[in-house]
Amino acid sequence: MYDRALTGIVVDAGHGGVDSGATGNGIVEKELTLAISEYMYDRFRELGVPVAMTRTKDEELTSTTRPQRALEKFGSGKDVIVISNHINAGGADGAEVIYALRNKSTLSESILNNLAQEGQEARKYYQRRLPGNPAKDYYYMLRETPNTEAIIVEYGFLDNKSDAEDLKKNYKKYAEAVIRAVMKYKGLNYTPTSDSGFYTVKSGDTIFMGNNEY
Ligand SMILES: [Zn+2]
Image (cartoon, rainbow, N blue to C red; front, side, top):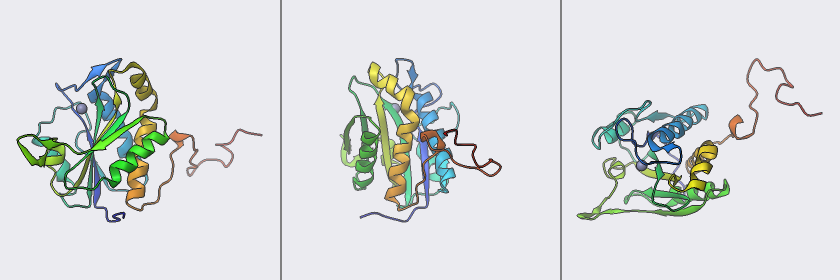
């Protein structure tokens, strides 16, 4: 059921530069997707997983350079996971995951389940075909990253006021839900972070530092 091999994970922060993506209710899509992606990058590193980012700053990437960058670090094998982070607009509420025509739904389904566990509404996971050529994916990050396991995660709707407030407050929790799904999907050992309410003892800490309860 699960595919254990993993070459690496590419985290893609949607939009950037003059392309802000959607904006509303105090959220600029390109900024929140970068914050989510930076969080993911740090966490995957912490978990010992090979990881790369398509952009690390406010920078415009074209529909050619973005997939190129996605394939630069780990190639385009089927054991490469590409996670493209986005925030939706259009008035609805909740999360969606889009997966490539070449892939199974297992990972997308698991991501939505985890997001629901963290309190986000799970709308749907789905595939979308190019109208002019239904054999191809509609979204270029899925279409132009051949062989890889590529997904687009839409965390919520920024033009929905309550969803936007929720995203501002909980985006790390939702990013963590995606990370947890990926680790399980690849059969890798998952440990929670201090950000999700667990204190991680580091070398140099005195032993009771993380515990003020009596
Ligand atoms: Zn977007």
